[in-house]
Length: 331
Image (cartoon, rainbow, N blue to C red; front, side, top):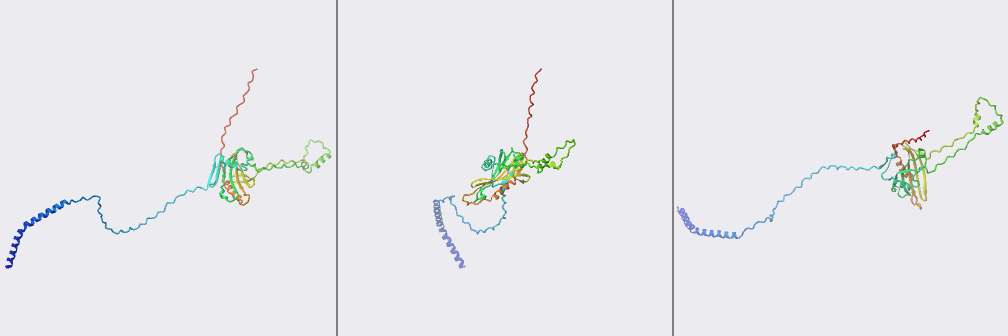
C-alpha cells in the first residue's frame, strides 16, 4: 500500500509541473516555426534547365557474341563471253563471189583495192584490158618478223570483155607461138612421077578405073597447123576448173613472185592473184622468208572461193524501124 501511495504522489507532482511548462513550450515552438518559414522563403529553388543532362549509369551487362551463321555460298553466274569468229566472210552480190579470210588480215575493196593492185609489178594478168579490181587482202608483217618479207596479197579481179578462150590465156608470161609443121611429101612421090612420064598414056575408057593404093600413097599429104593450147596448168577448186600460171619479176634486191588463177563464170573472167614480195638486205644479214609458207596462207583463202550464179540483167531490144518505101511517081 505504501508503494502505491508513493506512485500517486509522483504522478500528481509531475502533472502540476507539466501544466506550468506547457505554455512555455508552445511559445518556443511557434518561434521556431516562424524562423524556419522566413529562411525557406529567402532561398527560392532554381528551375532545372532542360539542357542539363542527368547522367544515367547503365548497368554494363556482358554481351554474349552471337553465333556465326554461315550463309550458303551460291555459285556466281557465269558470264557468257561471245567470241568473234576467227574468219570474216567477203561477199560481192554483183558478181556472186564469196570467200573467207582471217580476221587478222586487212582487206581493201573498190578504189582502195585498185590502188593496192597498182603498186604491184603486174596489177592484172588478162590478155585484154577491161579488168576491174574487187578486193585485195593483205597479210600482216608481224607473222614474218626478222625476214626479208615485204608484202603478201590475195587479189580478186573481174574482166567482162573476155571470152572463155581468152580467159584461159595470160598476158605474162607470153604464150609460146606454135611452130607450124612443114609440108611432108611421101618418099614414093619421085618414082611415081618418073614412071608416069615414061609409060605411054592409057587410052581413055568409059569405065572408071579404081585407084591403086600405090597411086594413093604417091599423092602429097599436108598436115593442118596445130591449134594453140590453153596456157597454164589446170586446177580443180570444188566444181571450178581454174587455169594457173606463175610469174617472177623484180629489180635489184626486190623480188615479186605471183601466182595467177583464171576461171570463166557468169559470162566474165575471174582472176585470183597471189603475190609475195621480198626485199633482201644488201649485206645479207636478214634471213629469207619461207615463200611456201606465205603462199600456203594465201592459198587457204583461195580454197574458200565460191562463185554463185548471177542472173543476167534483162535487156529489151528495140525493133528496128522499117525502111521508108519511096513513092512511085504517077505515070
